[in-house]
Structures are given as C-alpha cells and as structure tokens.
Image (cartoon, rainbow, N blue to C red; front, side, top):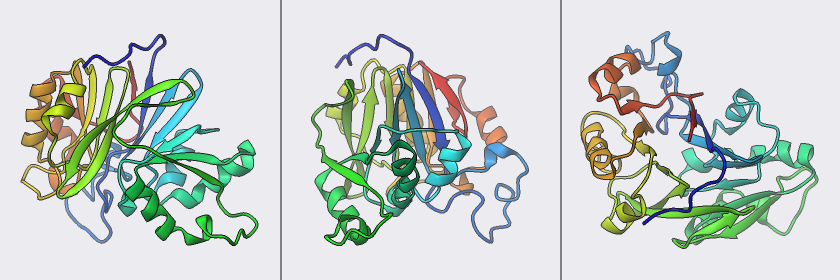
Length: 262
C-alpha cells in the first residue's frame, strides 16, 4: 500500500520513550535508573507530529504536561489515541491549558472502546454536570478506516497488545506503533514504503504484550524503512549508549526530545 505523498516536510518530535513506569522507575537503584545520561531518562511514550502548522499528539499519558512544556508547544489540533491504558490517556485533564490559551476544545480521535474508557476514567469531563474550568474535549470515533485531521491523511494500523486490539498510525511515509506484540499481515502491507518507523521494543527478553528488541528488529527487517527507532523502553533494556552500539546503523533506540524530519 502506498500512502499519499506529503507535499511538505513532516516533523516528528519524540515526546517520550518510556514504558508505563517511566525511566527512572520509582525507588529503583539499577544502572539505567541511576544513569546521568539524559537519553536514559524516559517519560511515557508519545510523539508530536508537526505538518504545516498542524500539531497532532499521539497519546497523552501522565507526563503530557511536562512533554508540552519541554517541546514548547503553543497549540494542538488533535490528540490521537492508540489505546485506553492509563500510561497513554492519563494526561487528558491537562488539555485545560490549551482550552484556555487557544479558546477552543481539544479534538480527541479514538476507537469506540477507548472513548468508552475515557468516559469512565473522566466522568467529570463527559458527564452532564459542567463545573467551570473542566477540560473541553470533542471526541471523534475512528476505526481502521483512513481519516483526516485538517486535511492531513491519517491511516490507522491495527495491531495487538497481547489480547487487546490497538492502533498505530501512518502519516505520509512515517509509521508509529507502540504497545504491540503482534502485527497482522494486512497491517504490514499498509506499512509498505515506510521511510521512518517508530516501534515498540520493551526489553531484550520476551514479554507477553510487547515486542522484545529482537522481535522489533524482525519487524524492521520486514518493513525495511530507511530508519527505525524503538520506543516504550523499560529500564531492563540497558543503557542507551551501550544498546545503540550493538544495533545496526538503521535501527536505534529513540530518546526523549529527539526530532526527526521526513
């Protein structure tokens, strides 16, 4: 499948590359958690897509506020959700700042099961009682069909997070999949022609609901992008510098604050 070619450069800002507990993990004394290298400090996984003044955030976990401050983001046009787990949805309350600054509600795109979960997680936002100052959110239901945000084409990528169906997303020649343990053939076909891939790689050893490093490298081999970067990384992976030195030239660990131009 060939995705529609973009007419202008696409900028990807890596907002976070950590697993659900983040790195460093609370109370852990391992070498990674005690590392002084900033590339070993990982907020919860998320990216910002910038295209012609369109700002789209994929997932808004508990570190959303700090990520927006770190990247100096003045507005967002949408948040696109991969799935309902708290490390990917736990920062939704902080859209209040954008409501105030931009004088508008924030558009959130998600599957029905994710929307149902958001209604449960944030009853004060989506209930009938509207207390002053509550987050203003417009929910938009998506499925595996392509959709547009302000004219920008988004292609959902179905994958599995153990037994939970999740979505990745393709924009132009950029594909992003986090929290995945299986990618069906149909999705791999949709990823054909990807030039930059960011994909889940939790640790070196196997895990029930995430790709290991070797499994992620196998997907990189199948998709064959120009560049691949790994995300949703736990402290069990090892030190950023050491692991990157072991990896092939076209596949590296992503890091918080990394900027990729396509």
